[in-house]
Length: 501
Image: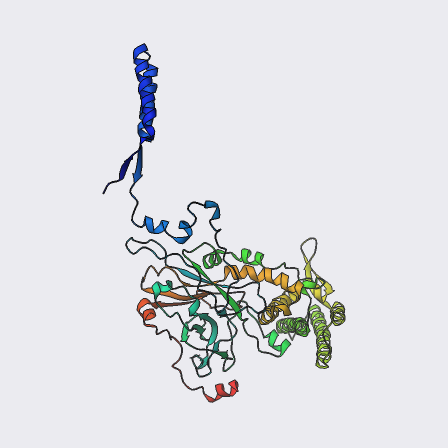
């Protein structure tokens, strides 16, 4: 095959004639530089007289004839700008996420298999159509049994719409309709349980008590006591993002993040209740504040009491215990007054908030603080000036705000919403799930179906190695049989049926 072909052209002949004249004149008058100039003009004219047209590679005509390029080859200023992906396009009828073009089968491809990032959406807004989510409860038909593990209901983790997964995920294997539901046993968090359902149904509540392993140790369920409702993980909608190659942000970034980096990403340590962002804004958040303070005081009293020698009690320790008991009684009285006002149907108002904060300001707590010379000294301070009390409150205030926000984003007042959205967005960026990607090096046939990290945003932990990870052989994905893990589906026993009723 010729590398190029020539096409004669007569536009260079006048220059050739002029170059020949210069060469002859230089020869006659014996001027070498004039002869050289004539030769250069002749050479240039020869290049102009012949066009070099290189052979086009295979497929070139097909590329040039693409509608976008063909219509704009002569009008480069009319080429449309690159489209911008809408970060919040998550409608149930939205098109599949864009992914890299199919590789040419005639040429070896070095492209990394597509990986899907499952990122919690922050911020949320009312009316956002949801097709995939983490936490909360699943939506499946009532005739489908809830997965069981060890005789207990499995913990629900995620529901993923297969219709929104890219075609080339898992090498074009696996389902592209219905939903994938991920669960894990209560006794063995992190062990995978997977179900594939073809029908979308009503919201299903678990047939029994659920105990999610949390990222921070807790002594009791403050939210359940404060609101009268069992605490659940927030139902967080997901954005499906297709990646052609892994990046340095995400699960790898989270693994490398030190405790100091994660702590720095959180809100300021100073939870000041004079700041509107940290103040209760409804009956539930006000009850969370009082329950946190009462629980923290009760725990301190029990711990210190257990350290007291009954045969030789320390007078200073007894004074400290009496102070704790007195302050706890005051918090309990405020809590009872708040419950009585709530039960009358009175709306929570700024006046009630001011009365609550004034009542808490009147309570004091004995503590030990370092002096200027570094030695610990006993001090008496207002209850809300105690950092341990404020930190305990903020942790549960955050849990309450997340549950309220994911149910109805506008229910969270603007000061709290702006503050928490910044905080939650950082975690959503670093704690996303993933599907697909390159196979494992030790077993190329094992493909990642779903990976979820330990998440502060969701409030769950999976022990060691700290993540929920489902891998399946490519043959099993191709077969479509994705129901794995858990007990063999059976009829619920009497105790579970009673809990469900």
